[in-house]
Image 1 (cartoon, one colour):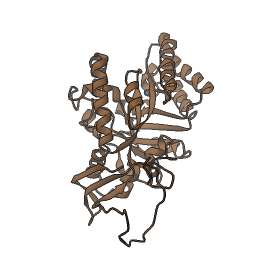
Image 2 (image 1 turned 180 degrees about the vertical axis):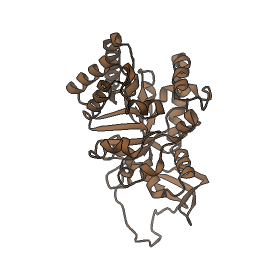
Image 3 (image 1 turned 120 degrees about the vertical axis):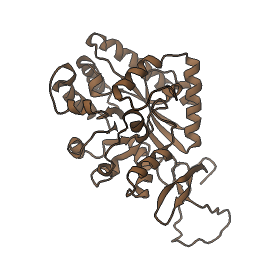
Image 4 (image 1 turned 120 degrees about the horizontal axis):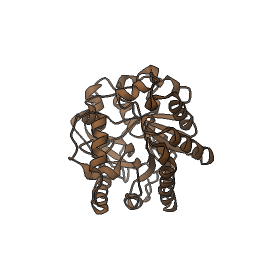
Length: 358
């Protein structure tokens, strides 16, 4: 690895640990830098403010009431959260933004950010206004040399006319990577099986599917209530759809976890990755802690698979696998050391920790 962090060569020793000049030995597992596929950096100032286990509806309503504060407060919290992610071994983040407030933090960060400029609103008369504001934010990111795309919040939070506006935008500006909160609550799941009323009409579900297929990559986030049948429509296009699990946030908001065994199955394990959600709904933004939660509730999960979810799969989801996610020549994925491993059973332990080496 050179001074810029790029891998010059990868040598297979065949298991023989021969000492050689400049060779360093570590007790643990060396892995590429983590990829946090879903975060809300701009909500970092709400750490320790939100009530846990109140359900998704209560959480969303509380966010709307509490998120408004000074830009100085938001920026200070975002900068601290960005630094914490870096120290915990994260090298790239898929970040949801509703404005450009945290742009300066991302621009100065040592991590790579894919910003998802999120739109939502149920008032049909405000669709043009909402899209115009989102386009302005996206352009600010692009003018700053950063990757950004306009994305829908969820099927239930976007009006008919806003879906139409988003569809028209995607037809003229086909996005590379998009994101959507997916089957995060039981009420949302019912919307996929019942067609009644404005919130659950078939038009909006069909429009959602149409929009998602316009992108090169689509991240389906949370999947807390998803079943195999719910996800079957995405299997036919495995290069497009990725499933992001945020277990710490799921426990905080609803005390509910996704079906980890479903995502570990042959149909989905190569397209599953990990996110932290925000500090409004999590104790920290540590990918290692998210892995520990998964292992705690699915102890039969292989560590090798969890490590892939936390690194390579996330890099593929954000279309960054050309430089991140694995140890390959000419990549610059960063190097993390994971210590405190139970090597006999190949499991993480409560003492497992991460140290950034590169």
